[in-house]
Image (cartoon, rainbow, N blue to C red; front, side, top):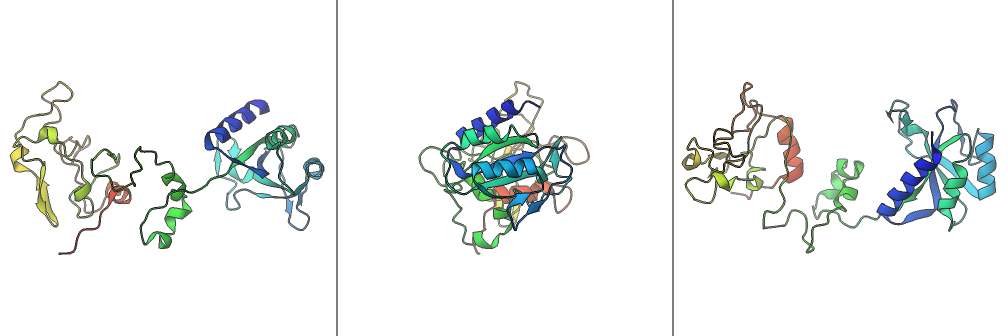
Length: 270
């Protein structure tokens, strides 16, 4: 394995993410090492080569990066339970050079600096703190990638610029939590009333005035495809034939569940 190539990749990633920690770094212990032990009382391992180097660089301890990683959690021959964090006694201004030095050890397959992740955006949902699953999957870090110009807050844009597609089994589009955010294909608005669905409350349906049997928007230059695709197109359909209604054949579908996570709204009280 080309260790220098691995370091180059890690440096590029850290440059993209910005600041890195100067008092710790990440190492991957080579797959050839069959037995790895960490002694909390001494902050050292059962690997003499690594212990000697930790003493030289002023490391105070080492711990597993992902304590709950199982031996089967892997991507190819990279196993998550083999990543360890080495903590230094003080700030090291040459942290990149330090990773280059440590990766030369026979027991170390790769070494990299660790990016400092600073959360800058958390939803203003008053129930955020009780939704344990979102912080668990680090959703708050994903929200920080919001980069739309103008300082708009996610979920509070009125111009309809953001369209999210759920590629899944089906979508209960007339669900009261979803219908207000449903994309409507106004290219198929045959009666010109400004919408392609009609109804209220829990009773919504495709606009009868737009169901004319014609592919009005004809976006693919073929008038015989995607006829009356008022809210999109269902490539699998109900019973194996594609159609213009993504509604699931059953009362529940995984696609509806995912759409609810992405774009649900709370209906106003009657």
